[in-house]
Length: 250
Length: 315
Image (tube, rainbow over all chains, first blue to last red; front, side, top):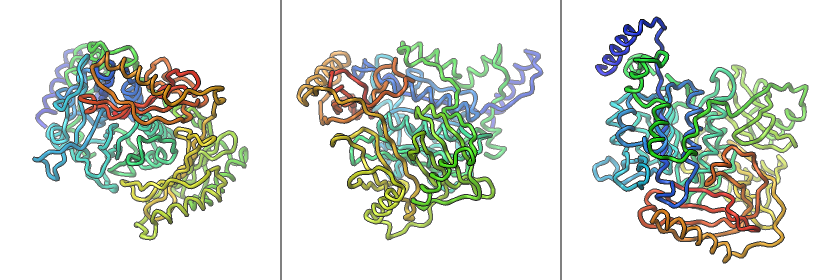
């Protein structure tokens, strides 16, 4: 609360300096973070276009849901420090990266889920690049989140601790304005992109945001056409939160 | 979100000019700031494409009187799969820029206007998908693998879908229930991603059915052998290793019909769908440190020309 108050004072001071008279409106920040450099030539010899495609798609669709400004970073700006410094202010969070449910002896249940920050231009990821759910939870200071999308492998599985980092209980009957989306298994980028395209397109279709995240999820899951790496890793998205929420900010 | 929480998170946002713009930049990365950051990383131009806030679906209302066949087909499909009718039916014609498709969509709504089911029919009268929007009931212990296969097959036959052979039945761990899949193939060669997929919910009811079918190009007059395809990919991975220092193993490969894509070629982003081509689909597994962040790479090698058509990545 102190932090919010200080920002408010800063804003008022700035307004006074400008002599502005515009009516204030609230900012519902969403950040879209995409690890690109790990999937570029310096690390793997080829340049994958999926990180940029999915980042662009997420930014556009979050904006249509009313989140503003849309921050975050594609590539080198996606650092652990930047993520943890910004997550507190977010209402919506989108991450596209390598994700996993990492072992942690200190975590309850032995799992501390995480994803990899961008390694930076010309560098490659290592285990020191993991941004863990426990660190995120600490940085959020218990504040709520509207829409969290983990466009990674595994962070939609039943043992993922990532929803809790954003105070989203792993229930499908929440009454809060909250929704967490992730993938259960190892997932092709093309399948995640197809799913997210369908999810956001249905959610942002219609009029006056009258569609729910549950409807959009069922729609996206229902269209099919999802290739999967092998029979042990069928394509499967998962969600937790409020099925009746419409995905908008605030 | 309650008022206190909103106050905690809220930031004053006025038009981003002058001092306030500096404030906003301090509060967190704005879109502009993140692009500057990316530029600073020497990222290639493909990474820096600005987001365009555009709807992926353009919906135009249609009336039952104008397209009675579409509404009748939707009813037939719902009946075949046991999906609910509503108090009224609403139709739209959709230009779907995400799926590169046009179709008619009929939504069943209850008396309060809440959607209960949706059906899509393409321009040729083929069903693209149907889904129900209510939450499933309690788990039906009788709804095992065999029962799921039987229910899905019964519905698909009643709906007149073009599935062939025995389906694959896959448990859906998180949702409960089963996905029953008929993989589409031509001359015994799988069409990647093309399928009839029926989701049988945990209560035994059918939650959705999706049908994906792409146009196929002519089969090439001559086809690269498996050994030739693997050799091409091995050459490719050697070049990757030279650039990155990472090692790769060339693993499973099979012929499939695949859609050319923009996975490794930014010039193809947003391009219209092309007919699917016959290709060797070759899995490549990174070794060493790269394996810690890239689980698999897939290359589509044109079976006729040896050209790279695209591929996929598991990060």
